[in-house]
Length: 232
Image 1 (tube, one colour):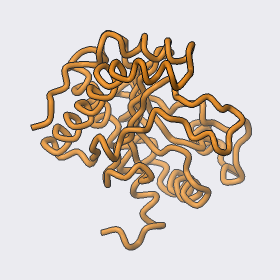
Image 2: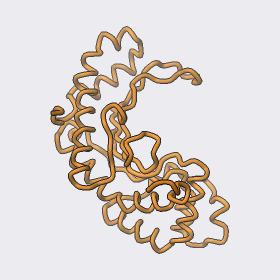
Image 3: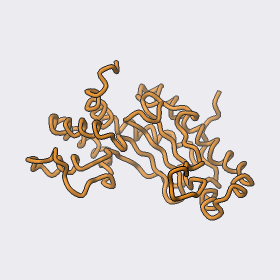
């Protein structure tokens, strides 16, 4: 039986602050046990708990600690930033369990702010074109989906918006549709207060976000299905 999720450790966020200050292999190795106990083990338990709850509720979101968690080590091969470690922890769950599957749940643990997000991130050009075409072709369904999100207190994250409308927006006057067509990633998110990440209630909060964002997931998966005719 996997260990139950009881919350991230009290020293999880301070660990990342200290790591950011020291940023050395020697310091990390000296404090590896703290990372394992207060960050890695709880995050693994969280993924197990969310996965089990999603299965029980029939929600299309899967993940295991091995498939979902990102490594703390940075890939510096092609980066000017040679810092060896990330100063946050993150994990991705998808309907297949694979990180590269679109329609994801992302959990971010950082001293600069924790949050959970659901949606379609960093779409490839063909995927983005298909999503935009679905918005144009099914405007009422898109608006109904957006209204459902709004009723749950969710709006599309504007940080992924282009400064100018794309060519697909030509001839469209409705401001809500133009704003949606400008998005490169279609994502909604909720902040996770520091006190919440140290509580077992975090599982229910993540599950609640997935449930509230299901209309977005369904719309996006339907839009992208034209690119995946083999998916049953």
